[in-house]
Image 1 (spheres, rainbow, N blue to C red):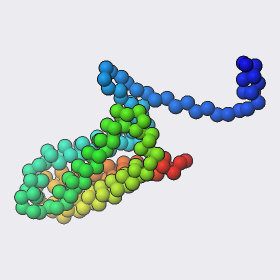
Image 2: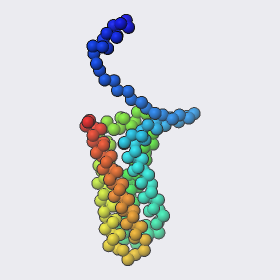
Image 3: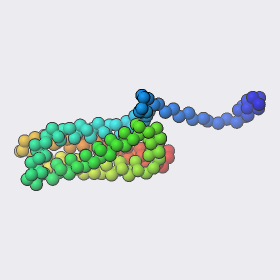
Length: 176
């Protein structure tokens, strides 16, 4: 039997792709740490970290946000806060899902959800960041508006991450 296998392997050449999934286990939780080492995992991790930083900066400057809730001004602040919260939470849940399940990352990347979600995130974050940046530059005589300029620039960087994720999601969905 072995001579037949050896003979066949000499005549037929083929490529074998070996995929390795790296996991880290404890007593009850299995983490798919290999996902974070991939390009979609790194982009999603960067989106979550940057979204957390932006939300932290907005919460740190909550007095200005509270004034716009009470007096009905600065709709750009609330719009930006709502958009960042929405996409931060969804990306966080997707990241947690891909970390806790070995099969989630490859399955989601094969659907068009990644492309549509990250494309919408790019568009909404771009609009909200530009809207906040224009509003902060127009009202530069008020206190703490440099803070909103910084946050809106970070929002533009986050939009760029979503654009890259959308491009990567499209390539994964359509194939190379």
